Length: 234
Image (cartoon, rainbow, N blue to C red; front, side, top):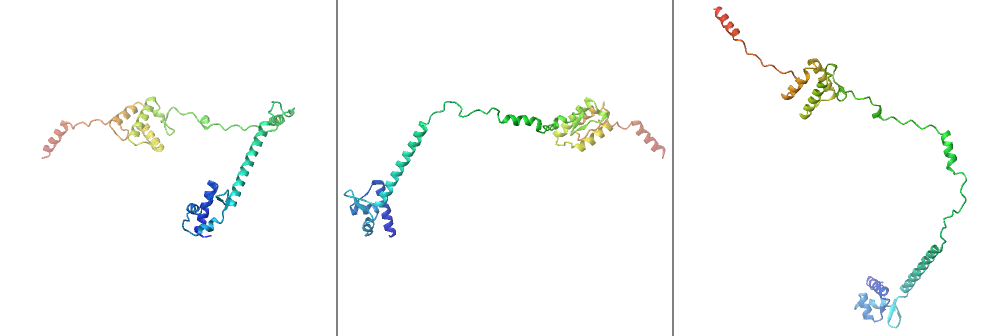
């Protein structure tokens, strides 16, 4: 069959499947097949047989239609039979269908477990529970105040200074903080340290320094003495 004949043949088979057959009139069938004025229509129509007076049908296509109808009927009957068996099955009356075991299977194993098994491992203590208590003189990073500065006022002064440095983005690391505390304990007493810290913060200094006293002016008597000494040397 040519491509033209195959196309017309398929279109006629589709029409038969949906309508039940094709018209026996050649012109009408040619219009359905898309073969108007083509001699191929006669070759295609030769594959159809006249049935029911004025209807052409392909015998093989009708056999496939019948096979599908029989299969659907068979599946429907099987489904009804299976459903009927399920519905007709006697319902359970709640009574057991066997004799209960005198000794539960798990009981011997549970009894043997207490005597034969190894003791339960001791749970690992939590690190938080075993950690040493925090010192009241700890400043930061685990660093504590030196002995000479261990007063509440000095502790608050150091924390205030660390906050001041943090706000200026000049915070301490552990090593730097340890060195600074050592130096402060050497340069200041516990009585003077809080006041020195407050003054350094108020002055905007980068370090903790004692308050600078105003420098006195030169005494007039000394200047006058120098002038006299100069005249005496002439």
